[in-house]
Amino acid sequence: MCFVLYIASPKPMPLVAWDETTGDIHTKPLSDRDLSVKAHFKNPHIYYVGSDTHCGCGFRNASYQNGCWPEEEWQPEGDTSQIEAQPNHERLVHFIHLYLSEPTTFEFYGMWEGDFTDPSLSDQTIPLDRLLDLSFYFRDRGHYTVTKGKSEQAASSNH
Image (cartoon, rainbow, N blue to C red; front, side):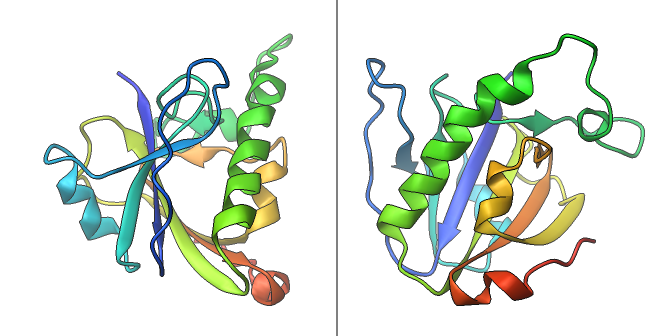
């Protein structure tokens, strides 16, 4: 089972095909199988976002376990997954800078594949650059309102 990530924006974004030679960020429209993920978003334009692993597993992600996301707090000694995922986070931020003008607010929602209708377990408002922090993990069933541009300075609430 894979971690999957979706983005919702106030305006249409380009569809970018998967290219295994580059492993770059790619997007595709919702399929019939994942249409129910729409319930997690306010913005109307929703896309699946893939990483260099083709799915969302290439992004730092934290699994919900016993009421928390342990990967955010504890990494085993010698674990390099934070650093290995960094190029995907950098490419994602670059993609957003290319295709969403500022200032703007958009959304992410991440989950394990198939959990489309399960309720959100976390709702955070963050500035776009937060995705570049090595300590940032997309939470399982986590909803993010992301600010880009002038309003980034004001975005800092966590729920």
